[in-house]
Image 1 (cartoon, rainbow, N blue to C red):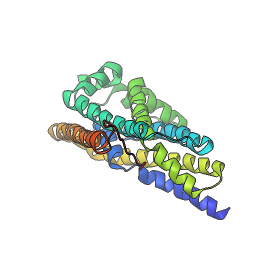
Image 2 (cartoon, helix red, strand yellow):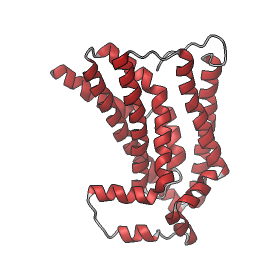
Image 3 (cartoon, rainbow, N blue to C red):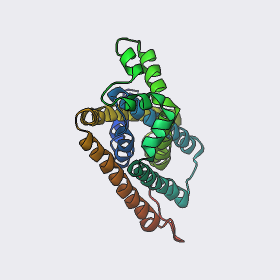
Length: 256
């Protein structure tokens, strides 16, 4: 029992480390560079982790309980989707479409941009209030808007699909009891949520500061994150599509 509990705790910390994988960092960076608040960036990271956890848990549980085998071409396709998504995020960032969508679907952002350098009315009012944890999360989700809340969830879901098979297979070879294995998946996912929230919060500090003090440097961060996302997405797509044989008659896939 002690060893199983130790493995579950290890799963939580491995989930936190999993949040720092390069493709995860690049994906959330394109979102965080558009945020004006550190707390909002942390919420976005947590939402990404929730989407990632959802697919890791559902797909992983199916593999563990029902011994579902994922064909190589399907596995490669899930990882290829991550590359395409990174390219799309980068292009939207570079062309300004992400900014346009934020202004369209988030009224508070339009208000803040109308008077440069000043906080939004909502932010000015809520700073004087010390709400409970539940109200704090609800307030930031409301300020983010449906668009900003769904975006990290969807991105996290796609990333979870790409990594779910590898995590489930690793757990199956380590933990014989399927229910303990599923508990491991859940704690791994919770660790990913915590790790991504902490990472996006840390990333937001310099971005928010430069956004307030040095507009040009803030713009450079936005462009840099977009270029990095496109480049990394092209690299992954080429590696999976050509190197992995997705577009050939003999695909070869090793979950990782």
